[in-house]
Structures are given as structure tokens and as C-alpha cells.
Image 1: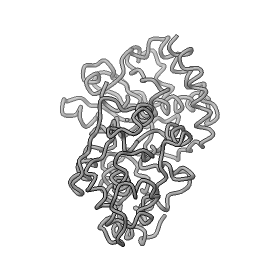
Image 2: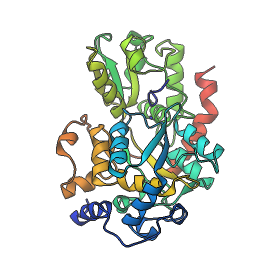
Image 3: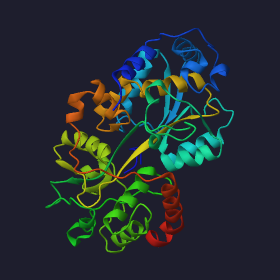
Image 4: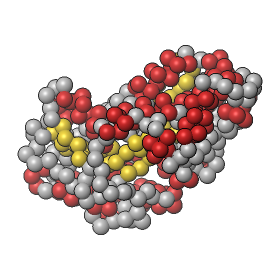
Amino acid sequence: MKRPNSRSVLVALAAAVTLSLTGCSATGDTSSDGWRTAESAAAGGGMDALVEAAQAEGKLNVMGLYPTWANYGELLDAFSAKYGIEVVNDTSQGTSQDQVNAIEQRIGQDRSLDYLDTGIPFADAAAAKGLLASYTPVGAARLPAAMHQQDRQWTSQYGGYMSIGCDASRVRTCPTSFAALADPQYRGQVAALEDPQTGNMQFNAVWAMSLANGGSLDDITPGIEFIGSLVRNGNQAPVTPNTGTIERGETPIVVAWDYTNIASAEELKAAGIPFEVHVPTDALWSEYYAASINADAPNPAAARLWMEYIFSDEGQNIFLAGKTRPARMEEMRASGTLDPTAEAALPPVTGAATLASAAQREAAKKTLNANWDETVNR
């Protein structure tokens, strides 16, 4: 399922984040041009100056930040209310590739995007083209190296685990492993993946299924072949999922991030549909997304203020309330600023997932792009 429209640190650091976001800073540049090249709030003159410049711009342009995806609805509303900035959220499209395409095709236009939320491989590709700006939010300063690009052209803001969602009223025994999806009892019930060549969640679903079928971080091919077999044996339904298709019984089994399947479960509960969510037992797969700023952002100060907000304690806890794992989760737990109620609501996970390296992601993407259509769509 893509985003629905068819997406141990010191207590002192937490205090610093709160102080920065309340506006305690020196006087600095309040013009948009002055913030276009600023790589931190301090470099631009401080948070007071950043807030003033962002409010003067008055707008933040984003794409594909659907309300139920990672709790973006609450996050956007909270940011707008806090700073009085209008958020223009284009939800007519929103895959990772759609966002990169938008900033490439709208250079110099007021309607271009300020902020991108993409998969890491797509952010790496955009950074290599010089499309992204370097920026380090105060709250993200101590994140480990694996959670940001070397030059800070992207920084991970939240993540989750690949999961299997299942309508227990239509499926006699819900699958709890990827391998089980090949069982003949699930004929026509496994929702089709949208194109993993353009969508990050779908790309990660293929890789997770690869691990469950003898693949590795260095070999995504078994996952491509497994999905090809689901198509040929009729287990994969020719329908991509959303809550409507689930409610109608067209896609009772959905492979997606745990937080998107949980959002579906909460929505379907109102319709009396028991939609279970399981983190598969045969492959624990996790990845974080990448937050980045368009180097040609029409509202560069608002883009940077938004980055400060989503990495603040407040912003990270809003992500957590959306059943994601915020990037600063371990740090905030250590400092006592993580919402314990929201953390307790996360689905249980046993073990630890190994994150792919940049080189492994690039190699897997090339392999998938070269083999997907021939193997799955033939």
C-alpha cells in the first residue's frame, strides 16, 4: 500500500531543543535569501530570526503528506497553529519519486516543494544531483551517522517495521510470515504492490520478502522472484490496497509498514472490521525515511523551521503517536521526554533489524529496476 490516495543521549540536549524552539536566540537575518544557504538555525542568526523569516514567507509547500501516514495530519496542523504558517499539501500524488520529480521540474517556481519525505535511496539520488540543501536541525544534531547523509542533505525523521495486515473476518487463518503468503489458501487475497521502482515502501517490501526467501542485504533477487510467483500462482490480487478495497474484501491481506497498517486497522474498526497487524516472524525488516529540504525551496526559512519542528520533542512525539518509531526515540527515552503511553501502543517486535548501507541500497535498487518488469509484470 502506498500513502493513501489511489507513504542514549543527555538530558541537556532535550533542554536545548526546547530552548531553541521557544525562540531564545540572537538577532539574525530575517530574509528568505539569507536562509537559503543556512545549514543550521545558529548559522542563520538563531531561532527568533528563523521564526520571523518563516512567518514572513507565510507558506510551506509539501507533497503526499497524507493525514494518516505517520500522523502527518496532526503534525501539519500543530505546526501551522504554532507558527501561523499556511501548509500547502499536494496530495494528488506523493511517492518518493513523485517528490523528486516535482523539485526537478519546478525549479524557480513558487509552487515547487520546500520539504521532501522520501525513501533514503531517492534522497541519495536527489542529493547526488545537487537538488537538496544541507541542514542540521538542533534536535537531530546527535543522531548516529547511519541516520543522516554525510553532508546532512537528508536526515531520518521516523521509521517502522514491515508488517502483514489481515482482515480476520475474511481470512480464516491470518498469515504471520512472508513465506505463508504463498499458501494456496490465500489465492486472490494478497494485495498487489504498487511499483517498487517509484515507491519506497514497496521497494522495502520486496527486500523484506527477499530476506524471508534466502536473500540478504546484498541480494534482493529472491524477493522479486517470490512476488513474481505470487502473481503467477494467483495469490496476488490485481488490486492495490486502501481502506476501501479492504472494506470491500478485495484486498484482505496487505504488506505495508506497521504504522500504515495500524492506521488502516483503526479506521476499519469503525466499520466493524477486525484488521490484524503482524510483524512477520521470518524476516524483521525496518527502515527510516529521509527528511530533506529542496535546495531551490520557494520558502527556505519555512522549510528550515519545519525541520526544526519535526525533530523537536513535540514533533517526534507526534510521529510516535502515529505508531512510527521517531528517529530520536532512544535519546528521548533516556531523557524522559518520550511519551510512554504512545510508546506502549506500538506493536511488539522481537529481535533487532539490520539496516542496509548506502551501497547496499544503491545496488538493490539497480537490481530491482533491471529485473522487476521482466519478472513480475511479464
